[in-house]
Length: 563
Image 1 (tube, one colour):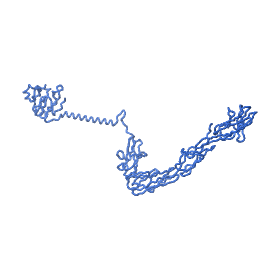
Image 2: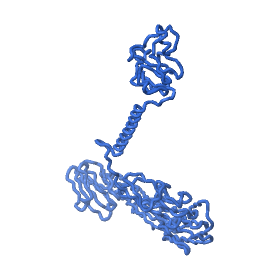
Image 3: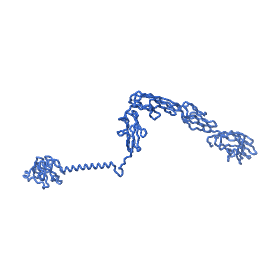
Image 4: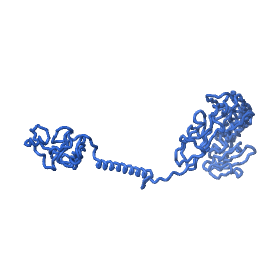
């Protein structure tokens, strides 16, 4: 049967038997009917014939009231006072129908059957409606830790509903009690629900959050020692709900940072100075305090870091920003998309102190700041921390311009390429000029001369490698005269001409080329061709080696021979 939202009704009918003379009437037993669903009451009678049968339904909860009348096999109708509630089944004269059963319809109903000329009888039934509405969970929130908390779950139901309380889905209590009570702890904060159930069904509330507040709890710090001129950062570990408000106080130092959860100051340069710093942490529950003492001692050599404070070494000198090994003062220039690399330096070194960067207002943690230049330019700040001087920051502006337009690329040659080509051409011209000068000078001056050599410019006859053709000119022998050298048919030794060279037959062994010997033994020598074809050999100084073929001995220190 259909359910109507938010309500449920069960009808309980007690069947009563009435035995009248000749007619027996019974109403079928009904199960629980849920509010909003359909209820059907069926009236049975016996005998089922013997005359005209009339069935009458009455509401007998109070004074009897007519609901409907049916003439079996004939007319039927519902009294106008009940027509909005009841109807008669068009196919079964015995059935009275309630389309939408409400809790207000609970009561006693009667079926009376009359067989005309025979007898009549009736039977009563009681309609009992049960239901379950949406539950409502209520409790006080927020509460402070240690306060009592009562969860109340209200629901309208029949019969009474059962209750289940849950936190974050876990069952806390289950049974007939509509309340759940406990003492608040910080761990009790969470989402709570109430679930109700009876024969009409089960329903639950949406989750509701309980907030549990507690006072701030501050973890105490041990007193600390710092070095002269150091930057000191104090931070307490605080737990609270709601979050605590921080109120710092010190008669000796001034907080120089913007973080409400830390207290930062620079220690003095006087050993023995003591600073007292107090934190007052408060919220809606309560306020708590904690104090720490800071004493200035001799220079520390080791950086000490805890969750509470940091000590740093003494000042190292003045801060500066360095690019490519050069200090930047105020501004530096760059082009769009250039890779910029900067170092922070204290004195003459980037060691022995701590620092951090900000690039355009954003903190950066790297030791060397690197970034790509953008058209809008950049503001760079180096903030010295451990061991930095006061003031402990230095800033520069990076001015960024567009890149110079390139003449290279498609359809053109870049400036660098043009310069390279021009330089290459100039170098080649210079080298060529030097070579030409050297060649011309060599041709004008001739070879270097040796005191014991005569010079002849000769070439080999490619047809007869045993012959040497006469050269174009003969350099004067160092021990002869220029006039004698002009006569290309003789050689000179010690200023005296020798006879023309002769080719001696192979079977002759005498190697003397002296003219007197040649004249005496002409039968053994033959002229070496016509005058233009004659070759001239210069014997080694002081010898009579007149070979008719050039050798190392004959042409030592002479000009090159072309082969």
